[in-house]
Image 1: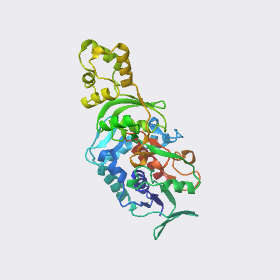
Image 2: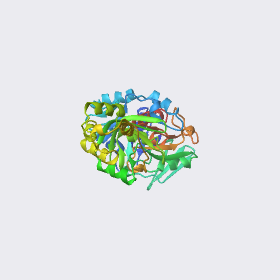
Image 3: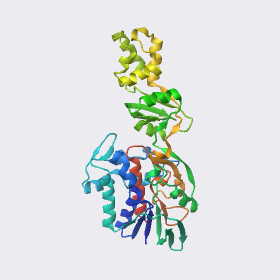
Image 4: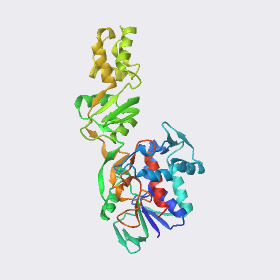
Length: 391
């Protein structure tokens, strides 16, 4: 076998079809019973397969320049050309995020068809128990089967969503061949709250969403929708900022990012002095949330009963709500794994190991994580194409 790819996810399948189209004899193996499980569940079942505004600034890595080469050589437009060629209907949801009109399986079926047309083989239910380098490449022990290849590609992903089969296998292989693994943690993940009063507030609002909140942490800021849950906070804006949050750090949430809340409340006081605060707040939030804000944060009285200092304080709380999450929901619901194989030990052009000839790492197993919105898929396509073009 010319090439064996471990991992039949987005990166593994993309690498397989790219290498096979070059005439290489390719085998993809995976311990799971089905290929592309993470593709199928992504984007709420519609697969946010790329982003029109993909650029290096949307990625997190200890080595921020690493992703530039691969992203430049296989762009979102290159992947979109394949999608269009297979006549997959898609749409832009928001912020350049491209989703299937139909379902995620359209993308998986496209990749599998491309692999099949190019002659790449896929073998599932094949856990690898041992890997050894030899004079001509690698020998893999898989159950009672022995496989040999010239080039070996690790496309096993990270630790996120273990129920879909995620393991640390890729990191173990990297360590076996002398690579450094940078600390890993859950990214693009909801926050949990344990403070009794705050948890009660969030739980009471479970399922309530607020559009276009601005959340800040550690010098980073995102503007997106926020969702209250029984356990704490979620929604796109929380998932985004979670990748920059560290345990013990506080976050600042602007619940009314479209206005100066203090000035707005003063205007409302002049125009509607007899209107209760919760009634005014219900113009911006659900009636339930307006009532809970008054119960947990403010008193509820007609606006004329508040002095300027009190209205300013209420506005400040709405524009600058500071809280410290207890933690995150962890890998169980995380969309990505932050950290991973140190990219300083991998070629940015080919994804080949600097430590072991003919060993390649692609996708999430590397210390490259994208923002929410299709960027992680584009990294999978681009890094896989880079390796598939040379293996």
